[in-house]
Image (cartoon, rainbow, N blue to C red):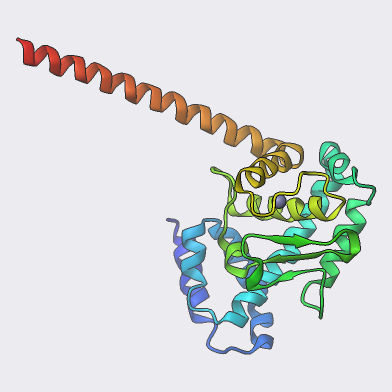
Length: 228
Ligand SMILES: [Zn+2]
């Protein structure tokens, strides 16, 4: 753990004496940097553990705004991502920018709400309703090997894909399909991340193979030892 992350966690715990939303908003730019530095689910959970519900929600909203801007940048820069998300007839950049501007407003089509958990979505286009649970959004990871930040961008684009004409299959209550959709979005929109976690998996597999080979050798060794 870096010295900076220790400092960040202490600071996070100390600078939030009040439940006031206005206080939360004043301090959030600093918190944002710290949450970005931590980028580890356990550290983030610990860092925000002493925030009130309101503070956690406001922080999650700010992180959602920031990551939505990054998701818009992904859509602008990445052809495969933009083509996938445009498949339902919506302009995904316009749609996502509109959703971003609604965050925190009454009856917003996209917002932070405990009911959202890891991400929930219904309705189409500008009439959609997307919700992310504050804790799940701040400290959640989706695919193995992804950073928190990558997961946040993935989950925004994932719910956008459902809202933009279900350009990925509906997956409500179907964890296997949801996982496949997470991979679809990551492959199309975060190709470098996709390759990294794929090669990480094959490294894991070959390490497991080495370990099981060594265990096998050990078993033979023991057998031989027993027999001699
Ligand atoms: Zn989904």
